[in-house]
Every structure is written in structure tokens, then in C-alpha cells.
Amino acid sequence: MADSPAKPISQRRRIFNKKMGIPTKPEKMLIAQFVADQTQEITPSQITGLAKTLRRTKEMVRRLVEETKESFVESAVDYVRIHKQATDAALASGTVAGLEVAVGASQWAMENLSAEGARIIDKAAGKGSGSPVINVGVKIGGMNEQPVIGVTVND
Image (cartoon, rainbow, N blue to C red; front, side):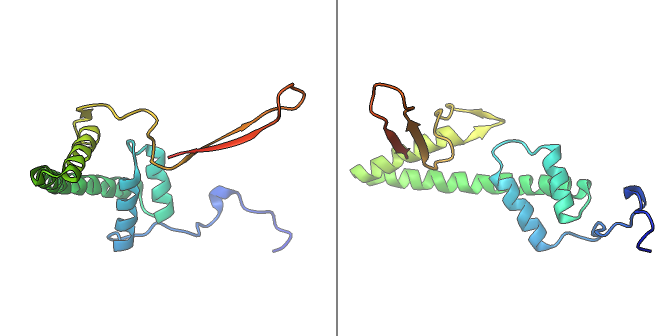
């Protein structure tokens, strides 16, 4: 057996077969978290990757992604209502802190809420994910100026 040639890939036995049956709760939770983390439309290659990772068919993963999106849309109405109530309460308080909260909440709503992809105002460029940005500057030797290594953190 040791000196027999290796079988071509097409003739090898598959080690990992696709799972059958209904998706498990952890699989649904993983897909829900994946969909929630996406800032853009999910691509076919991402669907393929999820299908391979979960050992499920592409059709099943595609269906689970669509169900998850529908669930998020249904719950979005409640979140918008709660957000509006909190903003109205902050505005009604009449305090400076309450007014600042109301302004911030209104600004967030105008930037993040959309109807069919259209927002009231566009998000500010450069805001990104909210994580700090580190810019490193290095001066090259052989110049008349003093070499300096500078690090700045923009929050």
C-alpha cells in the first residue's frame, strides 16, 4: 500500500460531508453575528465561506442570512421607537445635559437611519469604525533636519 500512487483528488473520499437537518442554535447565532457585523452587502464568496465553515449547503446558508436580515428589520422598528422616546425624554428635561444628549441622539439618527439605502445626511468621512488611528512619521537620514520619529493617536 505504501508504494501505490496517491489517488487523484476527484477520487478521494470526502472526509467532511455536509450536515443534514435543521441548523443548530449556535449556527444560527454565528450567522446572526456575522450579518450584524457586515457594513456592506454579503458577497457570494462570503456565503461560500460560511457554507464551507458550517458544512452546510450554500442554499441553506443563503436562506439563513435572509431570515436573519428579516429578523433585524422587524426588530429595528422597536429600536427606533425606543431611541425616539429616549431623545424626547432628554429634550423634555430642559437641562443642558439633556439637550446635549438630545442633539447627539438626533445627529446619530440622521447619520445612521436610512430608508432603502438613502440617509438624511451622509456619514462624515474619516469617522470609520471608531477605533483609534495611529499615524507614524519617520524622517530619513542624510537630510539637514534632525531625525524625528513621531506617533500621534487620533480618537
